[in-house]
Image 1 (cartoon, rainbow, N blue to C red):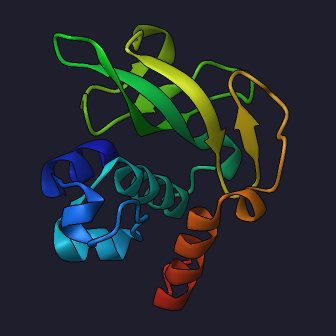
Image 2 (cartoon, rainbow, N blue to C red; image 1 turned 180 degrees about the vertical axis):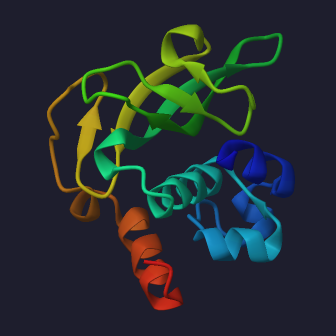
Length: 153
């Protein structure tokens, strides 16, 4: 599906090498045009593609996490996409590090920090939106504006 499509066709590359910026959030078209992206780019592309396929916005959240990687268990900042069957339900995790889609409870390598979509911003395990994500997340606002210009939204 959508998770496999992006995981197989896009090579993971740090923003500094792709975009000559420390942290750049690419649109799906920008990412596919280069054939490379980082975790935010994968999450945004999967989110927007699933939205285009009719998945409701309230069922999807991009989730910033701390991910333990490698044998040392070092923790890195990472983003995944969560699909929620119900608002308070356990999300399924779509990730570029591990291609198998699993419930969050089976991803003990991930610790959620905050989540967002086009309608809300959540901290940790909070079920109620805390803020307007376009006001709090300038990179999200910027990528939405570029997607609108591209005719993607």
